Image 1: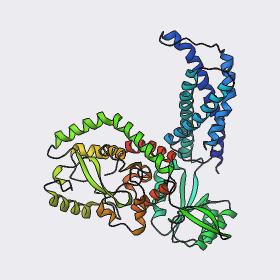
Image 2: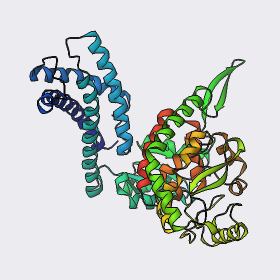
Image 3: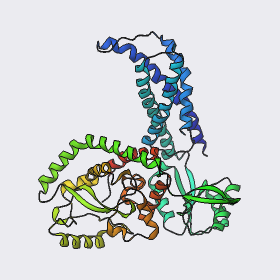
Image 4: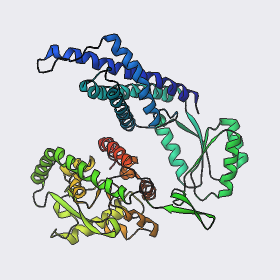
Amino acid sequence: MKRSEIAFSAVQVPVDYLMIVLAGISVFLLRDLLPQISHLINPKVYSVSFERSISLMLMVGPIFLLTYAIEGLYVIRTSRSFWRESFQVFKATSLGIVIIIIAVFLQRDWFSSRFIIVVGWFAATVYVSLARFLLRLLQRHYLVAKGVGVYRVLLVGGNGRPRRFAKLFTKHPELGYRAVDIMETASLSRIDAIRQEKGIDEIIVCDQSITDDEQEKILDYCEIHNIAFKYFPTTLQTSRFAMRIMNGEPLIEFLHTPLDGWGRVLKRIFDIVASSVAIVLLSPVMAVVAALIKLEDGSGPIVYKNERIGENGRKFFVYKFRYMRWKYCVTKENPDFEEALAFEKRLIEERSVRKGPLYKIKDDPRKTRVGAFIEKYSIDEFPQFFNVFRGEMSLVGPRPHQKREVEKYREYHRRLLTIKPGLTGMAQVSGRSDLAFEDEYRLDVYYIENWSLWLDMGICLRTVGALLARRKN
């Protein structure tokens, strides 16, 4: 653990406390001011002095610090994004407000203003999130500009992953990593030489072909020299499991997904509510897009139906705004279907930038001008909220693939078909369409095995940021 991380984490506690107190005082002052500004605001029905308001906030502040700690907001080393951290602050503040409401019910002489409780809830979330954001900016400045808190990483593996991560660390210094060297084999003598010459804070084994014996030796070395050890697991190693006893002997049971029983019910309720809200809010945008598509190329439908494979191999039609010229759309409704299919196959052979079952055509010449814009920002996928509402898809899950892509799956890839496909997912917020299929598969398997309603909400929030990022062609 770097000293700078410990220092910033230690500062975080009093800063949070200060923001909570400031939020409370702001709300008290605002409640005094509003009736003087507008006659529509009811005058306050209680009298709390400024000194009393400060003492109340100083008293309730530790309650929020406790809920923040429970939510994991004081983990010393973290790479949370702003939106994810803000969401956690919102959850922890909500828990703190519930405790305050219970306390007010039991201790009426505190205050009984719904205005203070509701607006204070909002103000505390905003103040704390903003302060944390500014503190993160300061920490990132020292990290990038001065190298304070950078982790020196040794990457081990004979595949292409170590070099990809070394380039990632160089391109994004804000991640806080620097690759000191790359090794293809697990040689302890070489590791020791690198440690003495350059220093090592972490060793990451990137190649699953390195044997357990070799990894065990590296782990022993790391424990002796206080070096963090990490590795990329196999699919079996990432599985959730539970210990059982059968006939007096330990038995390991591998668990498929929490999306069974009540998990499936909760996810469906969340999908219905969230998709309904999204359809209502995005209706004006979808109406404008529909008009623009019709104006540029009115020879085909506005919404393009593309057959995909869903849960348990069931076929269904995914709705998308048509971003290609109608004559190039690969659907049997197109009178030029055979020519369009042949043209697409040729483009895949010549321009696909993805390996594995999936394809991605670089500089696709079939797009319209409107289509290129809406596809770039994933606006073309807005009609899929109707798929979610109908129950054919979920808001979050593995992306649905075409039949010809599924036919290229290896047998273990079919695990992606055990839950409903999603409009967004782990892969989309971790790299979007730029990820290799195997990496996308592992992220989706992680999601399947570790599903929770909070995870779905977090992915949905992160998707908003991912949509604003420029897609690579």
